[in-house]
Length: 268
Image (cartoon, rainbow, N blue to C red; front, top):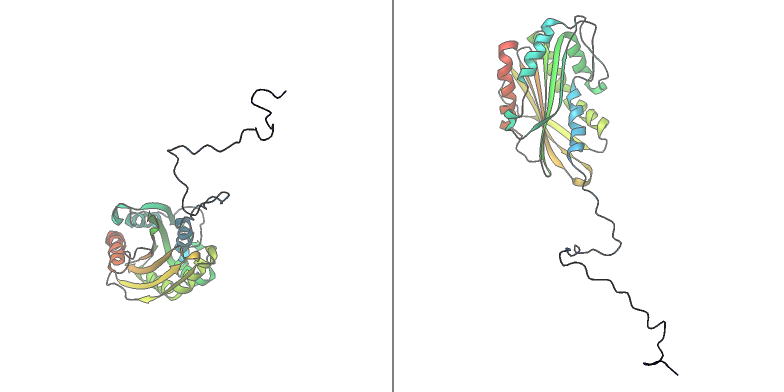
């Protein structure tokens, strides 16, 4: 006799497992999502690419410096005075942070540049002739994809007469030296500069302007280079900017801040 209610199919009677609906507070999937889609890739940050370009630019003149023993006291004084003239975060409006800083003073035995790029050799040789000290800094500000980087290098020479050949050498090799520095650190980056109108600052000023492109179109920025002689000091300011605000008069204004500080020690 069948049991009360009749015979039941043991297979068809198995409970059907259905997924429970997601909690009400769980957000809906984004448009285009489907099961098994790979997680989104982290967006490649822009500033490491740019810093990889900008920091080598500081070796437009100085690749490495060799010393004999014993720091020269006068060169050390030049170094300290040049360092005090470098641009700071407050000069740039308080939105920048320093990411690199170097200082050098020659020894009693002189100064020798080691490891520089061959395209920069004329400037290196001019520096070795009567170079006293070199200081540099890199400052950066970033807001999303908006990026600004200022690199400044101040070279102290023994006299205005020996500073002039350094300015000439940097200017004559700026394009090839800059291109070689970029290719060494970021081979795929395209960068170009050409002579531009120079501001009337310091004893003598030369300027270059151009553009930089990063693979994938993540960054397209302006590049400005300003070379100024102030007495026996040479100031090199380089800006990489995706906002278009670190050009022309703004560059001259920033460079002039350093020049004013250099006058008491290095002359005008």
